[in-house]
Image (cartoon, rainbow, N blue to C red; front, side):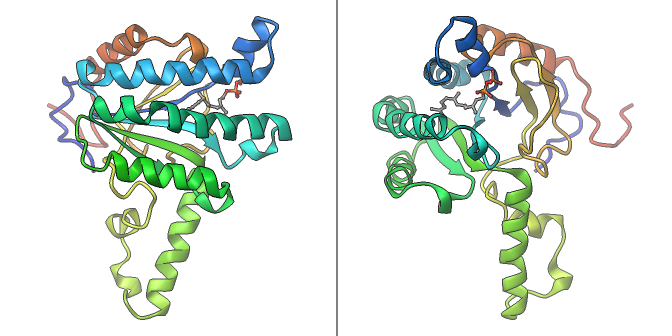
Length: 242
Ligand code: FPP
């Protein structure tokens, strides 16, 4: 869902963030990596709560990638526990702040307890409209497109769809993000200039900001600055502006 090409002066409706640098933040303090992830989780609350004032309606955050399983077993287990705790601890505040929470990514590999907490939080916040928070958990852009292609192929195989119906709009409806507009601004913290398999299809026309700040140090004020920078950009979506 692209915005009107003349709408370049306004702020981003959908901000997506690759929250990187928790490990280095902890290392700088001589602490284990999970200490950094816990600090990162506290930052999520501040950023979500800042969205209404910054005019951000959709916020999508990359919490765990399909590649993150390659980390040590203890880091993965610690992160999974952190996600469970985050949902249990934050559900009330999210609800009271009018946040609708949804998850993207493949739930098949996640443990049952975490998946039921995710389902419950989605249902609990389903009527909220103030901010749409999407948490990418066991998410990878290629994995998402592959799963979409499999579902699409099944529809064709079973005669509910013809190959002639398949265009970009049709494919988008099979993606995990089918309920989301495309991101306008993608931010990655911690100085790495990579997109690491995040929202590959959806970010075709997004603006990018790669900043040096480590995620646990990222503040709502810095988000405000990046949003200010965005307002000055001229997004042409492949067209030419007068
Ligand atoms: C990348 O930093 C961060 C992650 C893989 C995990 C992101 C998780 C959080 C911010 C915590 C909680 C999130 C929620 C939604 C509760 P890194 O470990 O790769 O850092 P490094 O590059 O410095 O090693």
